[in-house]
Amino acid sequence: MAFRGLHDADPLDPSVLLLQDRHRSHFVETEQLQEVLRPRQQMRAFLSLWRMDPRIRPYVIRAGFYGIYRLGHISIDWPLITYLVERWRPETHTFHVPVGEMTITLQDVAIILGLRIDGPAVTGTCMLDVAALWGELLGVTPPADAIRGLTISIKWLCQQLSTPGPDADEVALERSARGFLLALIGSFLFPDKKGVHVHLCFLPLLRDLMQTSTYSWGGAVQTHISRLWSWERRHVGRPDFGRSAPYPAPPLAHALHDDDVDGVVAEGMDDGLPAEPGVQPEPEAEVQPEPALPLGCRWRVPLTRVLNPSGVLLLYRDQLDAQTSDQVLWQPYVGEVVDQLPDICLADQEIWRTMSPLICFDTVEWHRPERVLRQFGLHQEIPPTCSYDHHLHRVDAPYC
Image (tube, rainbow, N blue to C red; front, side, top):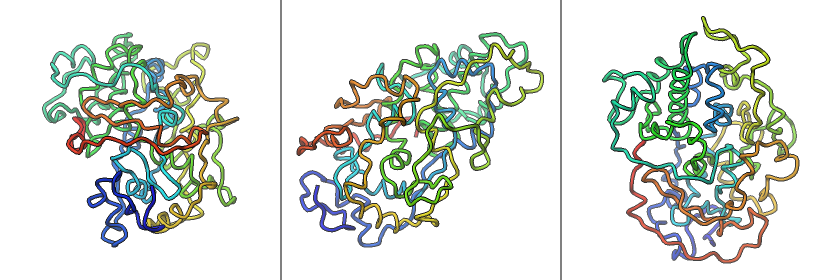
């Protein structure tokens, strides 16, 4: 897609980008939009509220969410997110930048987050018998002030289920694990507009935790990793990791140790700390080994910058728009970077380039790898025309 100029995002040919006259990028050149967006994120608050009981750790691993938990709170670079929003086009489901189209693929999600990308869609009914769900899956009934429609307070979940008693049986521990996973989903994967409630439509998917691990959670959260995706592929805005090199490379995920990031102890809810009062620690011989971590865990570092110390949006626009094709890391997941990743990150490689809808309840986004073949080491031809339904893009998600 050709543009009018380096900093003018208006396309020369409007036949593909049909919404340009109302797209955010249209107003950037006229300086009508200079404010920085502030996306919602509540992972840090969740981690400070809920210290994982070591007894529910096996259940979190069984459900396939341990990598997300260990990813923890990653500092958000607000100006970088704003730039990506300005370059994201709903017509093609790709970022339109001067070097061409780029996008977040199923490969990125699997490797960065360690979530399954193949399997049943994350969907179901929102017509729920909530009273029955409380008793069966959580074992508690929330008060009226903890409920808002079909959403429940994450803080209340933490208060009620974060500390199972010292004599808790397997049923009680599994209920505590479901509460933890539901709060994790609402804090990181699908936060609501205020980040304090989570929709109960996800709770039935946690009934059988082995079945939970088979759902395509990666397909449902494709667009939620934009900053990590950008750091993997483009050096502008990348944290400097305390190094002095112009474009410092991140450490390998398996080289990370327990650390303190932005005041939150990354492993503060895991086996390494003393148990809650009254909870006996597991015998050393029974402690499970630490599972391999997804690649995204290597970005769990303090957000410090060399190239843009004040995080100025205009500087990001200038530097990212000026990047040439040879400065983009089109294939970051090679060699030593992926050698130590868990199996789930590299599973289902045969569908990394599949063209299909990605589903999360009534939210549907298209996966369009045919438009970004350079990200797979292939030659990029002119991609086929995309169909666009403006009405469907106006549908709001039930958990928003």
